[in-house]
Image (cartoon, rainbow, N blue to C red; front, side, top):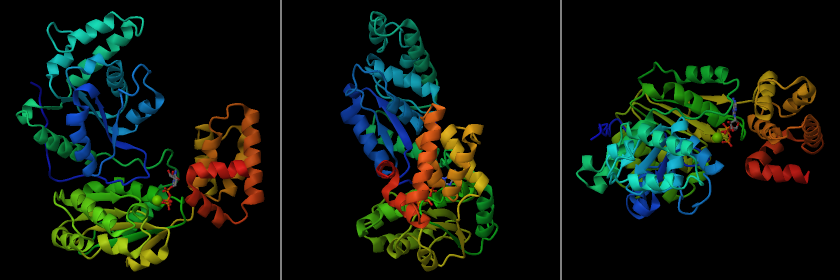
Length: 455
Ligand SMILES: Nc1ncnc2c1ncn2[C@@H]1O[C@H](COP(=O)(O)OP(=O)(O)OP(=O)(O)O)[C@@H](O)[C@H]1O
Ligand SMILES: [Mg+2]
């Protein structure tokens, strides 16, 4: 029997992300015929209730197809990869291919052995082993996959089954217990995973230093609140993530609550928000039955906790009052991002860090990373890229979107043409920069393309 890492519930969880970030916390790979309606269904539910984003593969639906690029991306974008080994896992080429891809990715793999033992997976062709017939079959279908592929599958199983994981046996066969162990362990593991700041972070250091200075990390006699303000897409969340990554390890508990404006519009959502924060900071397992009860709970339980809390994109005083009363322990730091400075004043922040966009060189750099995958454009595109970056006035989201739009234009003429036409469009049609930014924010990426095409 393999070594099992002891589940640790304290100190508790994780960064909570409500949406707007397309990474997954957990990727589940499993053989649908064995466990989809049992273990996986319950595990998925438990992980989701814990506030985690879970990618559930649909191997049955994709039968016969090769593993596709979106699945590959999902593996790459997941922090924790959980292959659930069951008796029929190896029958599926899809599952085996996933296992191989997991090994090639940077994700953190934790295997779960459902009704097989680790050694059955480690030596899948072992005589009499539950996976052996499937592998025998794969060898008779060398028209579908070659021997090298089968070798890679076996190596992947060997590697994964040597890692520390979970077994049903360790939980005396109780599925509920196993699920609790898995959820606790996943939350704990995620606690140490840094947030993904930006695809190509540029020029963050200055803002980061200023914000850290405002947070006054050495002060422990009170709660320090700092606001980050600026128009949509200017980089508020990005800066908050960079600072959070740098300092969250210093606190008893921490949580990053993304996109509050989009996720906490009504009373039920406020309760949800409170419940998630309580779970995240205290591993609170109970229910929050009303926003008022949530406030009472927070007041009662958080008093002694030195916490780092990021409240991202707050746009309403009710959200603020629901989650940020005077209840965090002394020494806590609260970072609030908002497009609306008035909200930050209502929050009685100690200081407001206003974001005004990147400098010209930084803007060109960010644009160039997204357009050409390098820090500076090649000479032929220098002029027009510089003008374009300037036209975006240091606004990261615009630079990112326009840059990315050029990314797949391979021919130099194509790029040059596209660059010039975008520049003309920007200059001709988007006279008020402020309103462009609002358009970007409101319309978001996909609509922005439509806008560009229409223009
Ligand atoms: N300094 C930076 N370096 C690289 N990319 C950045 C930087 N700042 C922001 N970005 C990118 O720009 C985009 C918008 O940033 P972000 O989401 O932080 O803006 P925001 O001010 O929080 O917007 P909103 O008000 O809509 O929430 C993101 O894709 C982010 O990765
Ligand atoms: Mg934001």
